[in-house]
Length: 111
Image (tube, rainbow, N blue to C red; front, side):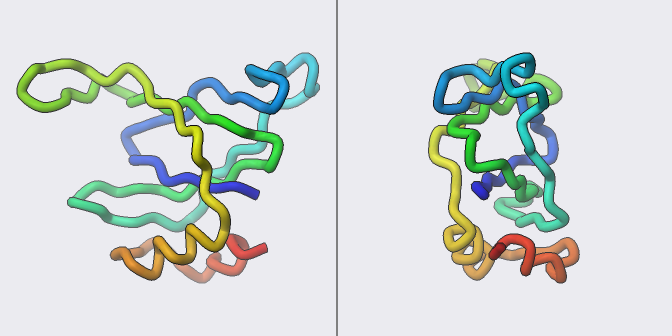
């Protein structure tokens, strides 16, 4: 399994596997992407932990509404996550951050 943190105001867009953009017809299913019941609070922002299957290489994420950046007023359209985290990296991040939201499920991250 692989993992990433995502702001609660953002959502998952397109997904890529080793052979390119995820094709539901070829795979005969949606990619397995699950929001875990664990989140971090970083600079006042809630970041939820997501788990994805190993076949997923890259995930596009985008805001539910337009997010303004800086004083220029430019809106973020989408961001592509190319480096997904391992379970060990997630545990390290949880250990060094303010974590909340029912950490009894931490065992499912390690598996």
